[in-house]
Image 1 (cartoon, rainbow, N blue to C red):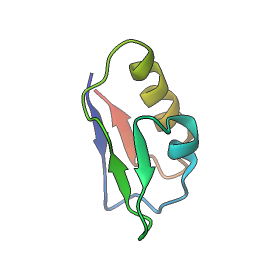
Image 2: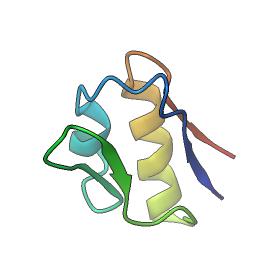
Image 3: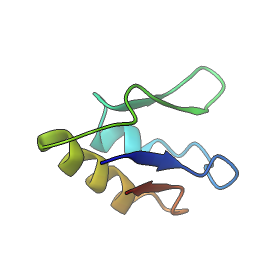
Image 4: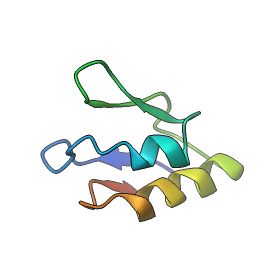
Length: 62
């Protein structure tokens, strides 16, 4: 599976980082950085959880 970020929508709330810190983080400017775009297994479940908690729907897992 692949994690996709809509950077135009992302507002840097950080809820995704809380849900999946091993997959993504906010940098010093508040921009979301994906540590891995391709995920599987337990990491895919974490990525889906991160997408669900995003208040502006800036993440999706394909």
